[in-house]
Image (tube, rainbow, N blue to C red; front, side, top):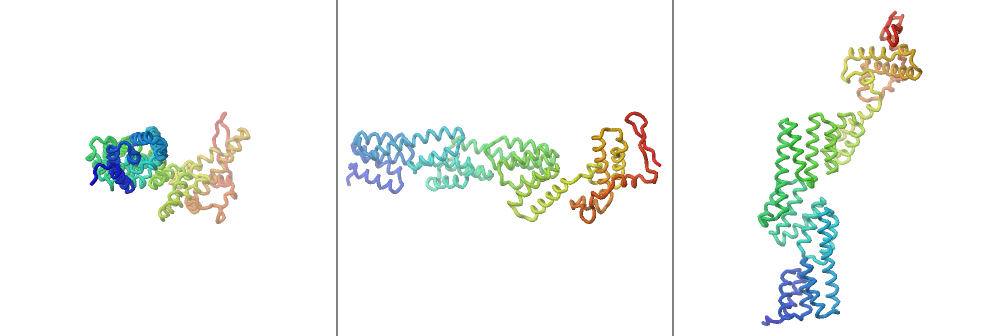
Length: 438
Protein backbone atom coordinates (compact mmCIF):
# COMPACT_ATOMS: atom_id res chain seq x y z
CA UNK A 1 0.00 0.00 0.00
CA UNK A 2 2.84 2.36 0.75
CA UNK A 3 6.10 0.87 -0.65
CA UNK A 4 8.11 4.06 -0.28
CA UNK A 5 7.67 4.49 3.47
CA UNK A 6 11.02 4.01 5.26
CA UNK A 7 9.35 3.58 8.67
CA UNK A 8 7.37 0.56 7.51
CA UNK A 9 10.52 -1.23 6.37
CA UNK A 10 12.19 -0.21 9.62
CA UNK A 11 9.30 -1.58 11.68
CA UNK A 12 9.26 -4.86 9.79
CA UNK A 13 13.05 -5.10 10.26
CA UNK A 14 12.58 -4.67 14.01
CA UNK A 15 9.92 -7.41 14.05
CA UNK A 16 12.14 -9.83 12.12
CA UNK A 17 14.99 -9.09 14.52
CA UNK A 18 12.75 -10.04 17.45
CA UNK A 19 12.07 -13.33 15.64
CA UNK A 20 15.82 -13.92 15.22
CA UNK A 21 15.57 -13.68 11.41
CA UNK A 22 18.47 -11.22 11.10
CA UNK A 23 19.30 -11.84 7.45
CA UNK A 24 15.76 -10.96 6.35
CA UNK A 25 15.71 -8.06 8.80
CA UNK A 26 18.94 -6.72 7.29
CA UNK A 27 17.30 -6.46 3.86
CA UNK A 28 14.43 -4.41 5.26
CA UNK A 29 16.74 -2.18 7.32
CA UNK A 30 18.90 -1.49 4.26
CA UNK A 31 15.81 -0.66 2.21
CA UNK A 32 14.64 1.75 4.90
CA UNK A 33 17.86 3.82 4.79
CA UNK A 34 17.92 3.70 0.99
CA UNK A 35 14.53 5.35 1.07
CA UNK A 36 15.57 7.79 3.82
CA UNK A 37 19.29 8.19 4.57
CA UNK A 38 18.42 10.40 7.56
CA UNK A 39 16.44 7.58 9.24
CA UNK A 40 18.56 7.06 12.41
CA UNK A 41 16.67 4.01 13.66
CA UNK A 42 17.06 2.46 10.21
CA UNK A 43 20.85 2.81 10.43
CA UNK A 44 20.82 1.44 14.00
CA UNK A 45 18.80 -1.60 12.90
CA UNK A 46 21.05 -2.18 9.89
CA UNK A 47 24.10 -2.04 12.16
CA UNK A 48 22.50 -4.36 14.71
CA UNK A 49 21.71 -6.91 11.98
CA UNK A 50 25.26 -6.74 10.63
CA UNK A 51 26.63 -7.19 14.14
CA UNK A 52 24.30 -10.09 14.99
CA UNK A 53 25.40 -11.84 11.80
CA UNK A 54 29.09 -11.29 12.69
CA UNK A 55 29.94 -8.54 10.18
CA UNK A 56 31.39 -6.12 12.72
CA UNK A 57 33.10 -3.81 10.17
CA UNK A 58 29.83 -3.18 8.32
CA UNK A 59 28.12 -2.70 11.68
CA UNK A 60 30.65 0.00 12.61
CA UNK A 61 29.86 1.91 9.41
CA UNK A 62 26.13 1.85 10.15
CA UNK A 63 26.59 3.02 13.74
CA UNK A 64 28.99 5.75 12.61
CA UNK A 65 26.35 7.02 10.17
CA UNK A 66 23.78 7.04 12.98
CA UNK A 67 26.19 9.08 15.13
CA UNK A 68 26.76 11.51 12.29
CA UNK A 69 23.01 12.12 12.26
CA UNK A 70 22.69 12.15 16.05
CA UNK A 71 26.06 12.37 17.84
CA UNK A 72 24.41 12.12 21.28
CA UNK A 73 22.57 8.87 20.49
CA UNK A 74 23.45 6.58 23.44
CA UNK A 75 22.42 3.37 21.66
CA UNK A 76 24.63 4.15 18.67
CA UNK A 77 27.55 4.92 20.98
CA UNK A 78 27.18 1.63 22.88
CA UNK A 79 26.64 -0.49 19.78
CA UNK A 80 29.69 1.09 18.13
CA UNK A 81 31.77 0.00 21.15
CA UNK A 82 30.27 -3.50 20.95
CA UNK A 83 31.13 -3.79 17.26
CA UNK A 84 34.74 -2.75 17.93
CA UNK A 85 34.93 -5.30 20.77
CA UNK A 86 33.87 -8.05 18.35
CA UNK A 87 36.55 -6.94 15.87
CA UNK A 88 39.14 -7.22 18.64
CA UNK A 89 37.91 -10.68 19.72
CA UNK A 90 38.18 -11.84 16.10
CA UNK A 91 41.78 -10.65 15.84
CA UNK A 92 42.79 -12.34 19.10
CA UNK A 93 41.02 -15.57 18.10
CA UNK A 94 42.78 -15.65 14.74
CA UNK A 95 46.20 -15.28 16.40
CA UNK A 96 45.43 -17.84 19.10
CA UNK A 97 44.12 -20.37 16.59
CA UNK A 98 47.47 -20.24 14.79
CA UNK A 99 49.16 -20.77 18.17
CA UNK A 100 46.79 -23.72 18.78
CA UNK A 101 45.56 -22.07 21.96
CA UNK A 102 42.07 -23.45 21.39
CA UNK A 103 40.75 -22.67 24.87
CA UNK A 104 41.39 -18.99 24.35
CA UNK A 105 39.72 -19.09 20.94
CA UNK A 106 36.62 -20.64 22.53
CA UNK A 107 36.67 -17.88 25.16
CA UNK A 108 36.91 -15.15 22.49
CA UNK A 109 34.14 -16.68 20.39
CA UNK A 110 31.85 -16.95 23.42
CA UNK A 111 32.39 -13.24 24.11
CA UNK A 112 31.87 -12.33 20.44
CA UNK A 113 28.68 -14.43 20.24
CA UNK A 114 27.18 -12.37 23.05
CA UNK A 115 27.00 -9.53 20.49
CA UNK A 116 26.73 -11.69 17.36
CA UNK A 117 24.37 -14.56 18.33
CA UNK A 118 23.45 -15.39 14.72
CA UNK A 119 27.01 -15.62 13.38
CA UNK A 120 27.57 -19.11 11.98
CA UNK A 121 31.23 -18.34 11.34
CA UNK A 122 31.91 -17.71 15.03
CA UNK A 123 29.94 -20.79 16.04
CA UNK A 124 31.84 -22.98 13.59
CA UNK A 125 35.20 -21.71 14.81
CA UNK A 126 34.15 -22.37 18.39
CA UNK A 127 32.91 -25.87 17.47
CA UNK A 128 36.15 -26.68 15.64
CA UNK A 129 38.20 -25.65 18.67
CA UNK A 130 35.95 -27.65 21.00
CA UNK A 131 36.65 -30.67 18.79
CA UNK A 132 40.39 -30.02 18.97
CA UNK A 133 40.06 -29.88 22.77
CA UNK A 134 38.30 -33.25 22.82
CA UNK A 135 34.96 -31.74 23.87
CA UNK A 136 33.13 -33.65 21.15
CA UNK A 137 29.51 -33.57 22.44
CA UNK A 138 29.64 -29.75 22.72
CA UNK A 139 31.17 -29.42 19.27
CA UNK A 140 28.60 -31.81 17.78
CA UNK A 141 25.78 -29.85 19.39
CA UNK A 142 26.90 -26.54 17.87
CA UNK A 143 27.36 -28.06 14.41
CA UNK A 144 24.01 -29.84 14.58
CA UNK A 145 22.21 -26.61 15.49
CA UNK A 146 23.63 -24.96 12.39
CA UNK A 147 22.76 -27.93 10.15
CA UNK A 148 19.15 -27.83 11.35
CA UNK A 149 18.96 -24.30 9.97
CA UNK A 150 21.19 -24.93 6.97
CA UNK A 151 21.71 -28.58 5.97
CA UNK A 152 24.15 -27.58 3.22
CA UNK A 153 26.59 -25.73 5.49
CA UNK A 154 29.95 -27.23 4.52
CA UNK A 155 31.73 -25.92 7.62
CA UNK A 156 29.21 -27.57 9.96
CA UNK A 157 29.45 -30.83 8.00
CA UNK A 158 33.23 -30.65 8.34
CA UNK A 159 33.01 -30.17 12.13
CA UNK A 160 30.61 -33.11 12.46
CA UNK A 161 33.09 -35.23 10.52
CA UNK A 162 36.00 -33.93 12.61
CA UNK A 163 34.33 -35.02 15.85
CA UNK A 164 33.70 -38.52 14.49
CA UNK A 165 37.26 -38.67 13.16
CA UNK A 166 38.73 -37.81 16.54
CA UNK A 167 36.44 -40.33 18.24
CA UNK A 168 37.94 -43.05 15.98
CA UNK A 169 34.71 -43.43 13.95
CA UNK A 170 36.74 -42.92 10.81
CA UNK A 171 34.41 -44.48 8.26
CA UNK A 172 31.47 -42.25 9.31
CA UNK A 173 33.80 -39.25 9.46
CA UNK A 174 34.80 -39.76 5.81
CA UNK A 175 31.12 -39.65 4.81
CA UNK A 176 30.71 -36.20 6.38
CA UNK A 177 33.96 -34.92 4.84
CA UNK A 178 32.82 -36.12 1.41
CA UNK A 179 29.44 -34.43 1.89
CA UNK A 180 31.17 -31.18 2.93
CA UNK A 181 33.29 -31.32 -0.23
CA UNK A 182 30.17 -31.79 -2.35
CA UNK A 183 28.79 -28.58 -0.88
CA UNK A 184 32.15 -26.75 -1.15
CA UNK A 185 34.68 -28.55 -3.42
CA UNK A 186 37.45 -26.13 -2.43
CA UNK A 187 36.97 -26.65 1.35
CA UNK A 188 40.65 -27.06 2.25
CA UNK A 189 40.21 -28.35 5.80
CA UNK A 190 37.66 -30.97 4.76
CA UNK A 191 39.96 -32.05 1.93
CA UNK A 192 42.96 -32.52 4.26
CA UNK A 193 40.89 -34.25 6.94
CA UNK A 194 39.32 -36.60 4.38
CA UNK A 195 42.73 -37.52 2.98
CA UNK A 196 44.15 -38.15 6.48
CA UNK A 197 41.14 -40.20 7.54
CA UNK A 198 41.36 -42.47 4.50
CA UNK A 199 45.13 -42.90 4.88
CA UNK A 200 44.82 -43.62 8.62
CA UNK A 201 42.06 -46.18 8.08
CA UNK A 202 44.06 -47.95 5.35
CA UNK A 203 47.33 -48.09 7.32
CA UNK A 204 45.63 -49.30 10.48
CA UNK A 205 43.76 -52.04 8.63
CA UNK A 206 46.93 -53.13 6.83
CA UNK A 207 48.77 -53.24 10.16
CA UNK A 208 46.01 -55.34 11.71
CA UNK A 209 46.11 -57.73 8.77
CA UNK A 210 49.89 -58.14 8.99
CA UNK A 211 49.62 -58.77 12.74
CA UNK A 212 46.97 -61.47 12.28
CA UNK A 213 49.17 -63.13 9.66
CA UNK A 214 52.07 -63.17 12.14
CA UNK A 215 54.16 -60.72 10.10
CA UNK A 216 55.11 -58.63 13.16
CA UNK A 217 57.94 -56.70 11.51
CA UNK A 218 55.61 -55.43 8.76
CA UNK A 219 52.87 -54.70 11.30
CA UNK A 220 55.32 -52.61 13.32
CA UNK A 221 56.28 -50.60 10.23
CA UNK A 222 52.64 -50.00 9.21
CA UNK A 223 51.57 -48.89 12.70
CA UNK A 224 54.57 -46.54 12.82
CA UNK A 225 53.62 -45.03 9.46
CA UNK A 226 50.03 -44.61 10.66
CA UNK A 227 51.23 -42.76 13.76
CA UNK A 228 52.93 -40.20 11.52
CA UNK A 229 49.76 -39.28 9.61
CA UNK A 230 47.98 -37.02 12.10
CA UNK A 231 49.36 -36.24 15.58
CA UNK A 232 46.08 -34.49 16.47
CA UNK A 233 44.03 -37.69 16.31
CA UNK A 234 44.60 -38.64 19.94
CA UNK A 235 42.17 -41.54 20.29
CA UNK A 236 43.23 -43.36 17.13
CA UNK A 237 46.90 -42.78 17.89
CA UNK A 238 46.43 -44.22 21.38
CA UNK A 239 45.11 -47.41 19.77
CA UNK A 240 47.97 -47.45 17.29
CA UNK A 241 50.54 -47.13 20.10
CA UNK A 242 48.86 -49.99 21.96
CA UNK A 243 48.81 -52.10 18.79
CA UNK A 244 52.49 -51.42 18.20
CA UNK A 245 53.16 -52.26 21.85
CA UNK A 246 51.48 -55.63 21.29
CA UNK A 247 53.72 -56.18 18.27
CA UNK A 248 56.80 -55.35 20.34
CA UNK A 249 55.70 -57.77 23.04
CA UNK A 250 55.40 -60.50 20.40
CA UNK A 251 58.92 -59.62 19.23
CA UNK A 252 60.03 -59.81 22.92
CA UNK A 253 61.05 -56.16 22.83
CA UNK A 254 59.39 -55.66 26.18
CA UNK A 255 60.95 -52.30 27.07
CA UNK A 256 59.75 -50.90 23.74
CA UNK A 257 56.32 -52.42 24.34
CA UNK A 258 56.12 -50.72 27.74
CA UNK A 259 57.14 -47.40 26.17
CA UNK A 260 54.43 -47.69 23.49
CA UNK A 261 51.74 -48.54 26.05
CA UNK A 262 52.86 -45.59 28.16
CA UNK A 263 52.45 -43.34 25.11
CA UNK A 264 48.96 -44.78 24.63
CA UNK A 265 47.79 -44.02 28.19
CA UNK A 266 49.31 -40.54 28.04
CA UNK A 267 47.02 -39.86 25.08
CA UNK A 268 44.02 -41.64 26.62
CA UNK A 269 44.22 -42.29 30.36
CA UNK A 270 41.00 -44.34 30.24
CA UNK A 271 42.38 -46.88 27.75
CA UNK A 272 42.06 -50.15 29.69
CA UNK A 273 43.60 -52.32 26.98
CA UNK A 274 46.85 -50.32 27.08
CA UNK A 275 47.08 -50.63 30.87
CA UNK A 276 46.54 -54.39 30.63
CA UNK A 277 49.18 -54.78 27.92
CA UNK A 278 51.70 -52.70 29.86
CA UNK A 279 50.97 -54.58 33.08
CA UNK A 280 51.66 -57.90 31.36
CA UNK A 281 54.96 -56.55 30.04
CA UNK A 282 55.84 -55.39 33.55
CA UNK A 283 55.08 -58.91 34.79
CA UNK A 284 57.27 -60.43 32.07
CA UNK A 285 60.17 -58.14 33.04
CA UNK A 286 59.60 -58.77 36.78
CA UNK A 287 58.65 -55.14 37.47
CA UNK A 288 55.92 -56.25 39.84
CA UNK A 289 55.29 -52.96 41.65
CA UNK A 290 54.51 -51.28 38.32
CA UNK A 291 52.33 -54.22 37.28
CA UNK A 292 50.33 -54.01 40.52
CA UNK A 293 49.83 -50.28 39.99
CA UNK A 294 48.44 -50.83 36.48
CA UNK A 295 46.20 -53.73 37.51
CA UNK A 296 44.86 -51.65 40.41
CA UNK A 297 43.98 -48.89 37.92
CA UNK A 298 42.20 -51.41 35.70
CA UNK A 299 40.30 -53.03 38.58
CA UNK A 300 39.17 -49.65 39.93
CA UNK A 301 37.74 -48.88 36.49
CA UNK A 302 36.29 -52.31 35.65
CA UNK A 303 35.66 -54.54 38.65
CA UNK A 304 35.53 -57.89 36.84
CA UNK A 305 36.58 -61.32 38.17
CA UNK A 306 39.28 -61.52 35.52
CA UNK A 307 40.81 -58.17 36.50
CA UNK A 308 40.62 -59.08 40.18
CA UNK A 309 42.55 -62.30 39.52
CA UNK A 310 45.19 -60.47 37.47
CA UNK A 311 45.68 -58.00 40.33
CA UNK A 312 45.88 -60.84 42.86
CA UNK A 313 48.51 -62.66 40.78
CA UNK A 314 50.59 -59.49 40.43
CA UNK A 315 50.39 -58.84 44.17
CA UNK A 316 51.53 -62.41 44.84
CA UNK A 317 54.48 -62.06 42.47
CA UNK A 318 55.40 -58.76 44.11
CA UNK A 319 55.33 -60.41 47.52
CA UNK A 320 57.48 -63.26 46.23
CA UNK A 321 59.95 -60.87 44.63
CA UNK A 322 60.49 -59.07 47.91
CA UNK A 323 61.81 -62.26 49.54
CA UNK A 324 65.18 -63.85 48.83
CA UNK A 325 65.37 -65.33 45.35
CA UNK A 326 66.64 -68.81 46.14
CA UNK A 327 66.83 -69.74 42.48
CA UNK A 328 69.06 -66.77 41.79
CA UNK A 329 71.23 -67.57 44.86
CA UNK A 330 71.87 -71.07 43.50
CA UNK A 331 72.09 -69.80 39.92
CA UNK A 332 69.41 -72.12 38.55
CA UNK A 333 66.23 -71.68 36.55
CA UNK A 334 62.83 -71.82 38.27
CA UNK A 335 62.13 -75.06 36.43
CA UNK A 336 65.43 -76.68 37.53
CA UNK A 337 65.37 -80.42 38.29
CA UNK A 338 66.40 -82.00 41.60
CA UNK A 339 69.79 -83.00 40.14
CA UNK A 340 70.40 -79.48 38.80
CA UNK A 341 69.63 -78.02 42.23
CA UNK A 342 72.08 -80.44 43.88
CA UNK A 343 74.84 -79.67 41.37
CA UNK A 344 74.28 -75.95 41.83
CA UNK A 345 74.45 -76.27 45.60
CA UNK A 346 77.68 -78.28 45.39
CA UNK A 347 79.30 -75.61 43.22
CA UNK A 348 78.12 -72.60 45.24
CA UNK A 349 78.70 -74.11 48.66
CA UNK A 350 82.32 -74.96 47.83
CA UNK A 351 82.79 -71.52 46.28
CA UNK A 352 81.63 -69.63 49.39
CA UNK A 353 82.73 -72.01 52.22
CA UNK A 354 84.40 -69.95 55.00
CA UNK A 355 87.47 -72.24 55.11
CA UNK A 356 88.26 -71.36 51.54
CA UNK A 357 88.47 -67.68 52.47
CA UNK A 358 90.32 -68.01 55.80
CA UNK A 359 93.22 -65.94 54.52
CA UNK A 360 91.05 -63.11 53.20
CA UNK A 361 90.26 -59.82 54.94
CA UNK A 362 87.65 -59.75 57.69
CA UNK A 363 85.24 -57.94 55.38
CA UNK A 364 85.55 -60.56 52.64
CA UNK A 365 85.24 -63.37 55.18
CA UNK A 366 82.03 -61.88 56.51
CA UNK A 367 80.56 -61.47 53.02
CA UNK A 368 81.47 -65.03 51.99
CA UNK A 369 80.07 -66.44 55.21
CA UNK A 370 76.78 -64.65 54.48
CA UNK A 371 76.67 -66.08 50.95
CA UNK A 372 77.51 -69.56 52.26
CA UNK A 373 74.58 -69.35 54.66
CA UNK A 374 72.23 -68.14 51.89
CA UNK A 375 73.29 -71.02 49.63
CA UNK A 376 72.53 -73.49 52.41
CA UNK A 377 69.21 -71.79 53.06
CA UNK A 378 68.31 -71.92 49.35
CA UNK A 379 69.20 -75.63 49.13
CA UNK A 380 67.17 -76.43 52.26
CA UNK A 381 64.06 -74.95 50.64
CA UNK A 382 64.45 -76.03 47.02
CA UNK A 383 65.49 -79.62 47.81
CA UNK A 384 62.41 -80.20 49.98
CA UNK A 385 59.26 -80.68 47.82
CA UNK A 386 56.90 -79.36 50.49
CA UNK A 387 58.96 -76.25 51.25
CA UNK A 388 59.63 -75.65 47.56
CA UNK A 389 55.89 -75.77 46.79
CA UNK A 390 55.12 -73.26 49.54
CA UNK A 391 57.98 -71.02 48.37
CA UNK A 392 56.88 -71.14 44.72
CA UNK A 393 53.29 -70.32 45.67
CA UNK A 394 54.40 -67.26 47.65
CA UNK A 395 53.37 -68.57 51.06
CA UNK A 396 55.24 -67.63 54.23
CA UNK A 397 57.94 -70.16 55.03
CA UNK A 398 58.00 -69.25 58.71
CA UNK A 399 54.61 -70.91 59.11
CA UNK A 400 54.31 -74.57 60.13
CA UNK A 401 57.71 -74.63 61.83
CA UNK A 402 59.76 -73.59 58.79
CA UNK A 403 61.64 -70.79 60.51
CA UNK A 404 64.71 -70.20 58.36
CA UNK A 405 66.66 -68.81 61.28
CA UNK A 406 66.83 -72.28 62.92
CA UNK A 407 69.16 -74.07 60.51
CA UNK A 408 72.95 -74.41 60.45
CA UNK A 409 74.61 -74.01 57.05
CA UNK A 410 77.61 -76.10 58.16
CA UNK A 411 75.39 -79.01 59.15
CA UNK A 412 73.70 -78.90 55.74
CA UNK A 413 77.09 -78.82 54.06
CA UNK A 414 78.35 -81.82 56.05
CA UNK A 415 75.15 -83.74 55.50
CA UNK A 416 75.35 -83.09 51.75
CA UNK A 417 78.99 -84.12 51.33
CA UNK A 418 78.61 -86.94 53.90
CA UNK A 419 81.22 -88.88 55.98
CA UNK A 420 82.21 -88.39 59.62
CA UNK A 421 85.68 -87.26 58.69
CA UNK A 422 84.41 -84.20 56.90
CA UNK A 423 86.77 -82.35 54.54
CA UNK A 424 89.43 -79.68 54.57
CA UNK A 425 90.71 -76.96 52.25
CA UNK A 426 94.47 -77.13 51.62
CA UNK A 427 96.50 -74.66 49.64
CA UNK A 428 98.47 -75.91 46.63
CA UNK A 429 99.87 -72.50 45.83
CA UNK A 430 98.96 -68.83 46.16
CA UNK A 431 95.21 -68.48 45.65
CA UNK A 432 94.74 -72.18 44.73
CA UNK A 433 92.86 -74.80 46.78
CA UNK A 434 91.98 -78.47 46.54
CA UNK A 435 89.60 -80.51 48.63
CA UNK A 436 90.60 -83.41 50.83
CA UNK A 437 87.77 -85.60 52.06
CA UNK A 438 88.01 -87.96 55.06
